[in-house]
Image (cartoon, rainbow, N blue to C red; front, top):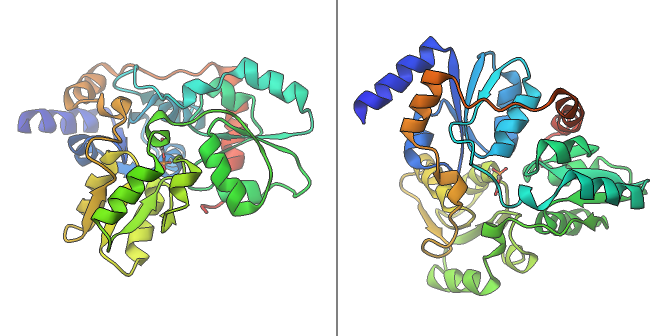
Length: 304
Ligand code: 13P
């Protein structure tokens, strides 16, 4: 293990590579990463970093966003099969059809989507800026929100805007029920409940804070307690405990919220990726140019 880590660090230097990892990645991957963060933070980093090689430890749509924002860099996803069940729920043809039916609507697309879907969109958002993205759109403008109906419902509730919601959801977050939350609250009556906005409205309504994974760090720091129930993918518990070793972080229920795609990349995969400089994520130029516009409009808007 020690040798493998040394070898990764040596190759990283030789290749002038940087390793980015999402907050849901396994502990050993977060530990070897140069930067960890949420979807918004990692997109911003991909665009601003000078390194010619980015090893992206996350899922495909995240690496695609990095490749779109930094077309001159090699963006490597160590395991190409790291997908996203939510991103798979929207396709570009169906979105084009919806646009034809509502030609005046602005299309706001959550970054958990393919490059082709982003290319059909006017502006992207993440869970960290979705409320502000919607607030940036004139009040009388019709909006189509793609592909997460739960995040869409949360943003509607926060902004008072009516939107046409695509019928998609993250299979992991959508599976959590209000009953699971009430059980966890009963088991930990002193804990504050933090919920990711990909959860159902009947779950977010019980939350003390609704935040992106990055926003969860800010929430716990400002809170007046040191005990929390965290309703998101269980990988998030590790960086929270790292940041606050003496505080208590509970999952909603044991093994209930695990995204298999976020657990695929191993240290061996990272080593191989750095050695061979592949698999590279490539997005066809015309698609990337259109998707970049939607991502750059989003990056101009501050976090919620
Ligand atoms: P964050 O942007 O909050 O990190 O969320 C990413 C994600 O895919 C949640 O399922």
